[in-house]
Image (cartoon, rainbow, N blue to C red; front, side):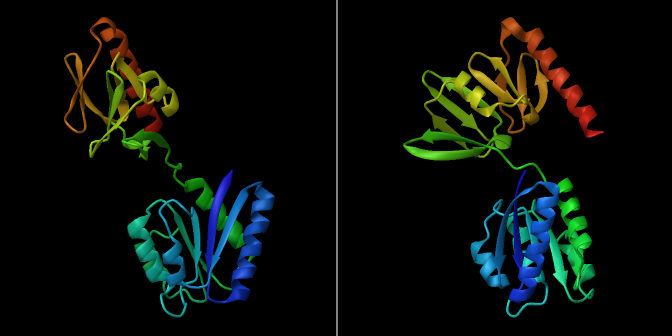
Length: 241
């Protein structure tokens, strides 16, 4: 398991202590660790990109941009990362709920405190999004697979519909289905591949998508395709319970 963790604290001694505790945890749990250090909130925000860090340890009381204000800015960019505050006072405990903090550690904390916080973070981290890379008009485009509604192939061109845009690429439907590699996608027609997560309902021999588009179902395989969709829906419903 690969995990990207950052520690932001204006005191170098505190950064080193916490970094050592995180490394001890990683060795005990067999976690492949990527550890990055920052000495201030402004420095952190300059380097921050959505998805770059999975777990953030932030000191609240730092000169300049505080850890709490940095967390507020981060939450506008990334709602999936886990934020753990490491500080000298409990005064900001209520504010930590505002940014959905995973934990709140008061210095000096112990190894078991860090272990407990990391256990919770790893258990609740969302699955990293997967992307489909295609060449479109001589440019490389990465499309989040979960945002794909359906793919339509016309001749030698594939139109990838995301609901917000349509990306055109020179790729075959079978090749794209293999690259996506997800059971959430159904080949419902020789020219269409549909993401069942974006199906609103079935209308006759078509699927009505979230975008409102109608995607045709192959007339020769209608019963089989309907059955596969119903089976998928049943499994998803039970998983959500």
